[in-house]
Image 1 (spheres, rainbow, N blue to C red):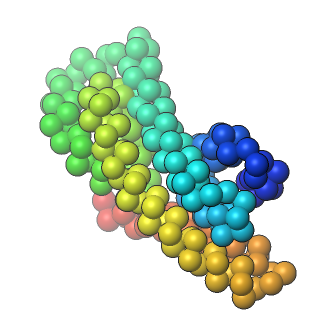
Image 2: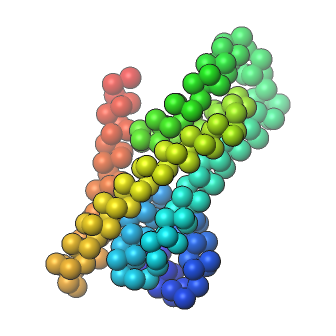
Length: 188
């Protein structure tokens, strides 16, 4: 569906940016793969694609932070902030914020709880945003370039079956993330 919208808006880069940003809110990795393939099909340019992906992912991450900050205002949740161990956790998180947020970008399943906790404990928003932006530049660019390369191979060699190959590639990316998250969970 994302590919269809990008094809329809090939002459409207701002609309393409909005579509890709919205797609990252649904599933970042799939949006990255499909956007890279659309670059290969000359539907969207590389700069527009990357800017839209970066913006969408960082805005989504800041949105999770904001959800945590809103949760902290909920009267029922405020009692957790006043627990003595919460102050220790808040101090540790604030001290290690950049590294923790940066590393979480590369560990599946950690972003939702961590980013909302950052907002809940009011960890520094500027440091949080900088860390998520830096990590997004590395992770998203790497996945984008890999998808551009593999997508090009799939488009060239699979002919009419190319979309099956691309769907399989997206499924492998998603399943690998879930497998890594499950492995990490089992180790804990």
